[in-house]
Picture 1 (cartoon, protein in one colour):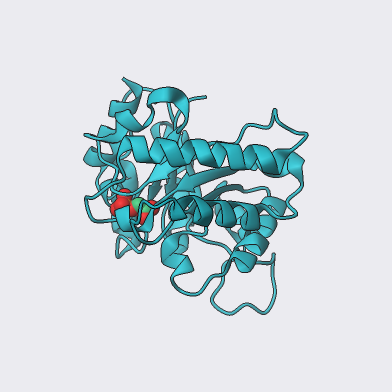
Picture 2 (tube, protein in one colour; picture 1 turned 90 degrees about the horizontal axis):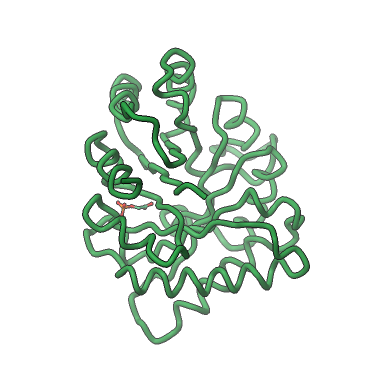
Length: 252
Ligand code: PGA
C-alpha cells in the first residue's frame, strides 16, 4: 500500500487566493509514490477542485473536508454535510479531530458522522488519541474506546473506507511528537482493536496513520515495521516546501 499523506490546513489560509497558491505549491514534478490528500477549509474546496481539473499535476491530489455533519441534510445550523463535501469535490473527510472533540463532540456524535460520511461515499480519516502524556497504559483504553465507539454499527464491508489516525493530543502543533516507537506500539494496538471489530472480515484492510508534529526530518521512522502507513500533517502542510519534504522523505 503506498503511504497516505494528508494535509490538514485547519483554519488556514485566510483567503481563497492564498489557498490556491498553497495548493499550487504542492505540485510535485515527479509522480508521487504516495496518495496525497488536502483538507482545506470547506469554502475553498470548489476553487481547489477547479484547479485540479485545470492542472494535470494537481489532479492526483485528492480533496477532503475537516469535519462533516451527522446527517445528509437538515436542521443542523453551522454543519456541512458529507454529501455537500462530496458534491464540492471532496473524496475524504477527517472526523473526530481532537480540536473538534474539544468543542464537545462525543463518541456518539462521531459515530453518527462516520456513518453519514460513509453513506455519502467519502473516505473517513478517524482521529483518536489521548489528551495527556501519562504513559501508564491509559492511552490504550482511550484509543480503544474511541475506535470501538466510532465504528459501532458501521457495516463491516464499508470499513475499508476508514483509516484510523493516532493523534495524541499532547503531540499536536508543538514540535513534540510521540516517538516512532510509541506511535508504532499504539498503532499495533489499534490494528488489534480493528481486528476485533472486523471479526469475520479479517481481510478488510484499514490503514493506521500517525499525526502530531510530523516533519520531513522525523517522518520516515514512523513507517518502519509497516504498522503505520501514513500521516495527518498540520503545521508542516502550510508550505509546499515542507509538505513535499515529507513526501520526499517517505517515498525516496
Ligand atoms: P501538527 O497537527 O502536524 O501541526 O501537529 C496535526 C493535526 O492536528 O492533525
